[in-house]
Length: 333
Image (cartoon, rainbow, N blue to C red):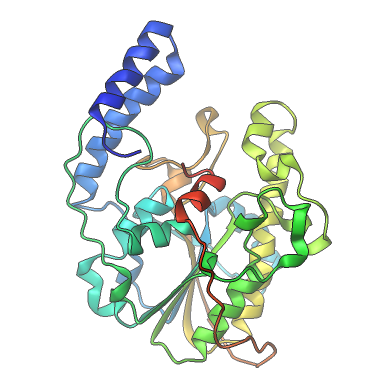
């Protein structure tokens, strides 16, 4: 939606006239968001991942620190779960504040394999607009474009390699099997890039553990879990269990990656966390410095290529990809 003082004024007028408290709070939040991006586009708050030493950076989308700690004992490659403050509380903000001109030298040595459509929106299309109407904009983003990378793959542009999911997934075109992301990362790793970033989409909704591992049709609840818990169709305990299973799905694939890539220094982290009922909110939002959003995992491990998996070198690219449709289907717009 972006900048629209007229839209914002209309939104507020309607909220006041209808005495709609939720809309009124959204309008007030948008003023705050405009101010937040004015400040943080110049002075990002948090730790940029390029300030640390690593060969491979693995990003779990919307992964909470407490969630990774709960399942850590199930995976040998997860030791102590440390944490850092992220430079974003949603993916768009993370991409804008991570890949900046300040780190151009390191970015030029980086291969980015990403399943998050915000990467293409920001790095290819220069999308800096917030996803809500704001009354003013005074930003100075310094993000780079896709040409700044040694190599980049937006996996949602690829020919869909999981046709067996078929109609079992209502938003099947939005599903990204983590094993496919792993295959693309393995191919990049064997091309000897100095740095590799691998951005998995899980544990971000939809919850696809049953769909991918057990070949079960994706339910409405799994596709829209936050609506389901707010409607009383599932409990918060149900939500937490499904979220952890979605996380395990990605971690199982990361285990494969670590056996098929050589890297002395591997970091497992997240772009942002996730609200799961705190203050009655679910999901993640631009410019919200809540600890469950801004505090993300930070795990150091290593990898050794045992050649147990041999993916194709190059993907097939689709011609009909619409990043806006992908953002909408995943709840970003």
